[in-house]
Amino acid sequence: MRIIRYRNPENNPQWGWLENDLAGNLSSPPFEPFHRLDAQIPLRKIELLPPVSPSKIIAVGRNYVEHAREQQAEVPNTPMIFLKPPSAVIGPNGVILIPPQSNQVDYEAELAVVIGRQGRWIDILRVDDYILGYTIANDVTARDLQKSDGQWSRAKGFDTFCPIGPWIETVLDPSDVLITCRVNGEIRQMASTREMVFNIPQLVVYVSSIMTLYPGDLILSGTPSGVGTIKSGDKVSISIEGIGDLANDVIDEKRA
Image 1 (spheres, rainbow, N blue to C red):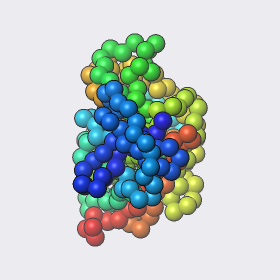
Image 2: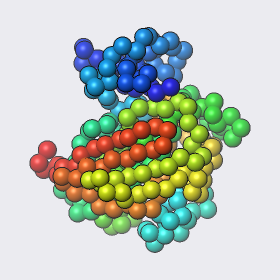
Image 3: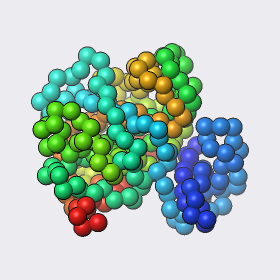
Image 4: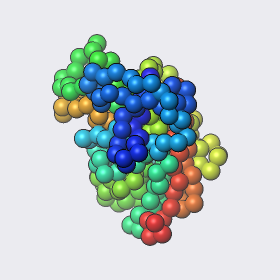
């Protein structure tokens, strides 16, 4: 099932679900028992919002060997995690703002895990019980600031630096799906999740051994090789097999 959040006629966020190109409402948030109302609203007539509002975003660095190599960095022995602030989130068709502090802002296409229930010290055999589904994420990064700062909070944390969407796919085997990133229609990244150093169950177990995961939290599972710079006027489109497409325009913040 595909779960969405959209703006209803009263201008409030509404949980819903998709059947083909028609949307219907959910009676409750998907983290609680709910039932689906009839899908009667054409998708083209609604404004999709970020499909989740996380309390925290945990991202994973260097989780693909070739990406570590292109960054001239070692592959970590354990997952390298960092946090992005919830204020970085934008949804499908939201605009990525290039901040004046940076001269090199990069895209990073990633599969994101949406947590469905609270968990700490999650058993690897029960990981699926804690996952609501999956969505697409772009771990936008001010690469020059990442290198100069030595730690990643500023480089990864600007407003608009975490596009997610367009929805949550609840039925997906994340072990071998194709991730493709295009900039202005040109393919820049293409790889399978089977190339991850640490797979999804391992990441969930590892993160939950450090911090409590809450419903709606996101784990960004790392980006393949092929990352590169984006500039004002570009369009970044990320496709993940079995989920769909996430597209965002890019403009300078000073122009916004």
